[in-house]
Amino acid sequence: MPRPELLHRLVAETARRERAGLLRRLRVVEHGDGPWLESEGRRLLGFCSNDYLGLAQHPQVIAALKRAADDEGVGSTSAHLICGHRREHAMLEEALAEWTGRERALLFSTGYMANLGTLQALLQRGDICVQDKLNHACLIDGAQLAGAELKRYPHADVAGAARQLQSRPDSAALLATDGVFSMDGDVAPLRELAAVCTREGATLMVDDAHGLGVLGDDGAGSIRAAGLGQREVPVLMATLGKALGCSGAFVAGSAALIDGLLQFARPYIYTTAMPPALAAAALAAVTAAREEGWRREKLAALIARFRAGAAELGLALMPSPSAIQPLQLGDAQAALDTAQALEQRGFLVGAIRPPTVPKGQARLRITLSAAHEEADIDHLLQALDELRLTPGAG
Image 1: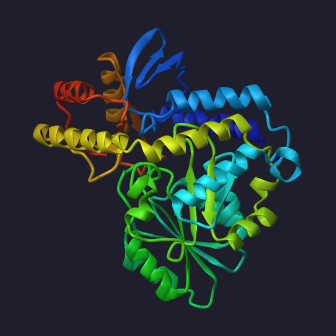
Image 2 (image 1 turned 90 degrees about the horizontal axis):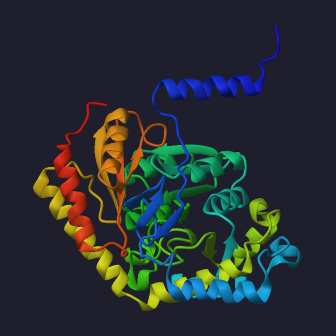
Image 3 (image 1 turned 180 degrees about the horizontal axis):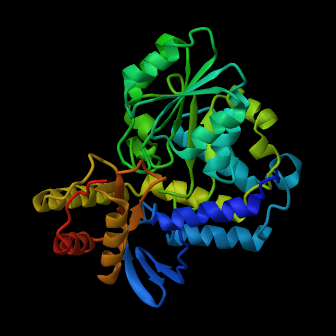
């Protein structure tokens, strides 16, 4: 029997996805101006970016990047552990650790790499990794890469998480959860999960990619908002490419955690360090996020305005207090058609379909930013009203 040819199989699987109406496609954005995007010759008002505080085009962030690029060039030229770890990286790590109330922080090139590296360094075969079923893909992949037994619990089900930990009482255990869930926008029950971990002797890890900068005192994230610290949540991962408007990620925790990651986190050890100019820009973004609290206040007001307007229209918003406001439509084609209809009206909104979300749970993932104005929210609500949306059957 002939050996299967891998590229042919990939082509066939892609074709099946296209027939199901679930094919992903790239869009080229020619220019961005705050929430406004130019694509395919049209100017669209975007409600799909993760620039929650509107910092991606902050003048001080841009200026910091330019200054560092003029001084240091573009690439870091090497991995951190060779000669790629520059002054800009060290300064950013110190600022992130201080902001999040942790002993130390370690930069990674992407959030995906941060989670893969952290889980791989912490877990071994024979351990268990307990995760929320709606966790980001990189947390799931990280546990599998480490060779640990992955045990998942129903979304935000604290009792379910406890049962999974109790099923393997003699194994080393890590409980990993998103802080703010990227597709639903809700916040994990962190205080309750921390209590379970304390009782069961497990380590708690929180991916706060969508909480940092938005939630908590000083924008320090969902962990701070829950009144927790390094003792209750020993492992924090967050990204620089959401509310901070830059790119990259970091892990923060005890000195022992960071020293261990330096030795064993392969996606850190064997990757070229992020450009020092990008680290300088991210440091300026951290300063702006902390000092310009009006951005969080404005975002919170826009979220409240959008949710109140949606309720008046009878729209099926999911229960989210964050900048992520999913509008559940159920049917994948209905979500795609609605996104296209909104684009015809001048709005760019993401249609999220399986396999990113479960079958029957397709939605518009509407994201708000401090860069939006009240009139932008009102115009989007008017467009949604004109479309007469009702939840699909799935």
